[in-house]
Length: 114
Image (tube, rainbow, N blue to C red):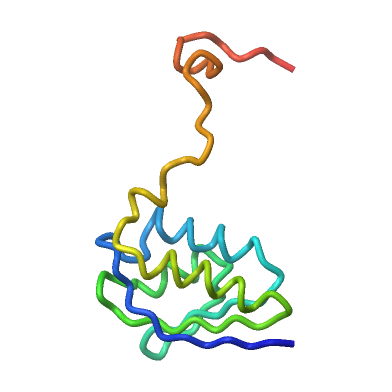
């Protein structure tokens, strides 16, 4: 079992609040590794949105991420990239947005009932 520990300065202007916190948790949950995040004296589960929000990690605050498991290195690489970026808007863009012509809500159409 591998363990990786890194201190990271939160660079995005939003800190780890709301959407950035949700993205952090989404990334953490892609991996089998356990993820712990510490700020000051508080340690939380990095796969828990409530935990990440409780840290109240603002821009330029320092957090410590510890990943433990067979994919700990891969998990750390992605989490470090996310938490350390100052271009959060780019990271939050959907990868494959649904085109407006295929999205009924964009045209006022009602979705088919099942």
